[in-house]
Length: 480
Image 1: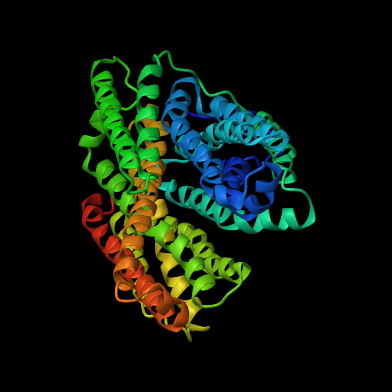
Image 2: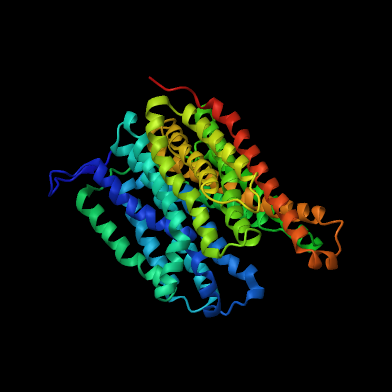
C-alpha cells in the first residue's frame, strides 16, 4: 500500500514534509497524555472533586488509558484496510471532537467519557503514522523517521505537564483542550492538500475480535489498578483477572477462525517481531519507575518544589527524544540489536547512578545521571519500532505498529502497579521497628528510610533494564 502524492504546489513536497505534518498530530496527541498532570489540581474544584476523592480524579487519567488501549489495535487494523491516510485524518477528527467535549465538560462523568473519545483518536495516530512511514520511505531509510516519530512522542509527553501548568497559569484549564482545535484543523488541511487517498483493501475487518481484545486489555488495566488488600477489593481484582483471561482466550480462538484476523498470530512466530515486543515490555516497566520516582524523590526528601521536581524529570525525558533520533541513525548503521542493547545498558547504568544519590546530590552529577538514563531509553525507540515494522507484511504495518506501543503501555501499567504494592510493603518493612511517635519525633530517620526505599526502586529498575537485554539478543544482526 503506497501513499500517492498529488501534484504539489511546491516542488519541495517530499516524504520528509509529510513526516513533519503527521508529527504535528502526534505531538499534540502525546501532549494530551500527560498534560492533565499539570492541570488536575485546577480541574478538580470545577468538577466537584475534593482532595479526599483522588481515586475519582484518577479516572480522568484511566479513561484516557482505556480509550488509548482500545483504539490502537482496532484503528490500526482499520487503517490497514481502508488506508492509512484516510484513517489518520479520521483519528485527528475524533481527537479534535474529544478535545471540544473535554473543554465543554460540565461534570466529572462527561469529562471521563470525553477523554475516552479523545484517546481513541490520539491512540490511533501514532501507529498509523508509523505505518505511513513504512509506506513513503523505502526499507533502508525507515529507521531515522521512525526515530523522529519516537522523539516527537517522547518530547510531547515530556512537555505535557509543563504545557498544562503554563496554560493554567495564564488561562483556564479548558483552554488546554480548545487549543487542540485550530492545530488539528491545520494538520488535517495540510494532509488533504499534499496527499491523495491510499488505495483501499477488500479484506474484511474483524470488529468482534477487536472488541474482545479491547475488553481483555481494559480488564487487565483495571485489575492492575486495584491495590487494596481488603477482601472485597481482592475479590474484585481476582474477578477482573479471570475476566481478562477469558476474553483473551475468546480473542485467540476468534483470530484462529476468522479469515482475515485482526492480529495474525503467525506474526508472533517471527523471532524478531516477538523479541522486539517483549523487550518493549521491559522498557515500559523500567521507564515508569523513572517517571514516578525522580520527581517524587525530589519533592519528598530532597526538599524541591513541584516545578523543580518536574524540571529534574525533564532532563531525563528530553534526552529520550534526543536519543530516539540518535537511535534511528545507529539502527541504520548497525541494525536492531546493537543500539537496543546499548540503550538498555545506558539506562541500567543511569539507574545505578540514581541509586547512589544522597541528600546532598547536586549538579553537575545529578544532570549527568539523568541524561545517561534518558538517553538510553531513547536509543531503543527506533530499533524496536523498525524491527517490528520490517518483520511484517505491508498490510499489517498498522496493527504491528500499535502492538509496539501497547506492549510498552502494558509494561508501564505493570511497573506502576508493582511499584505501588511492593513499595508500600517495603516502606512498612523499613519502618517496622519505629512507633508512630518515634516517626513523628525523628523525621530525619524517616527521611533516611525513604532514601533507602528510593535506592531500592532504582536498583529494581536497573535489573529490569538488564533483564530486557535477554530478548534483545534475539533481534538479529544488521541485515545486508
